[in-house]
Image (tube, rainbow, N blue to C red):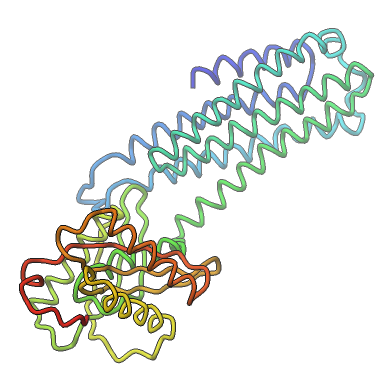
Length: 374
């Protein structure tokens, strides 16, 4: 915020001094970045407020609302500066301001320093956004980067002014306005889509299904939905179990699924239990099961397997399952088994992302006579 205040003030002063519309628009863009940071700071502070009676899921969407306000401000700023820039581009603004010709070569190195400073701001915001999982901060980083690019366009306009090409200042002024407007429109579109209830990505659905399927007794997972409240996300999903399971057991399975989703992904979960119906034969799941049965027969340290999950997307096939191994097996030996299994799955099923979780056998599993079955 402090950096943008100083930078915007210097740009505005130089814009008035030289008469450059492009530089003045760039100063407004920098001030817009300062305001955006203030809006995000306030909205993120509100978003961090604990739940209350009126907002039982917290105030996490305040960050998205603040970002939407920021997007509207950027669009308005772009429209305001596009008009005078267009007039200069078509020749309605007269001759080249003397300040642009006299100070052009002196200011170009200064503007390049401004560009470097804004690029550093962009990388700082992007890194911080990734570290705290804030889409708003990552979006704010794009604003800083668009301001940095806009400064480079201003450098071009000053170079053109030295050769009495005033229309270049108008052209690049339009370019600056375009950067501002495009950043605002893109940000508004993303936030509106999120507030309207955007569906989770295929990768996220796969991760949720994998976390649920890791619980013993789960025979299938479907109908995964996510409700995004900003820093609080609620997942609802249907879990299939054996119809002979008692209600107390199914309740225990549902609780373990909720805990698994919370532990692995940090999301609250609402689980709906269903009876597992006889599934239609899935050649891919059967192929994985055949490979695992061969492994159980071949590897004396592998006692069984469970929680097989085969999912696919436009990009790749994902195979997840758990192996039950002898207690005390070394990490090196587990890694060898996992590596060989992943290679065998790849040979039979093509390119696939294979996730294997090795878990030691419990005492009661070690004491019983191993039947080498699942």
